[in-house]
Length: 129
Image (cartoon, rainbow, N blue to C red):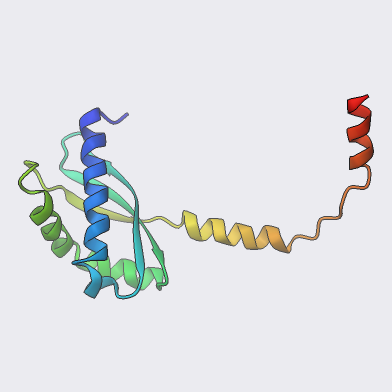
């Protein structure tokens, strides 16, 4: 379980990284939309596990570019939060594919051919009697 301090730190990093990907990271991500879905911080505040979700992008290529530029992103983070924290954490990025999975499941479900249950109306009447 995360301490209050870890939770506070996680929220700060999540907010700042989101803004970094919108502003300073624009040359890196291009037209893609990057969402920081979750940040988990180690108890010593030295490592931040960052889950990222992408829209309008080739996930693998963009994820590789972000990982290759991890030092630059950490530097941007340091410029933003360096005065309020002692340690700028190492960043470990993970691809959060839950949104893509949810979209896929919506498509699968919408293609299912489920017949209407004719007995449904009758059974509702029996319950109300």
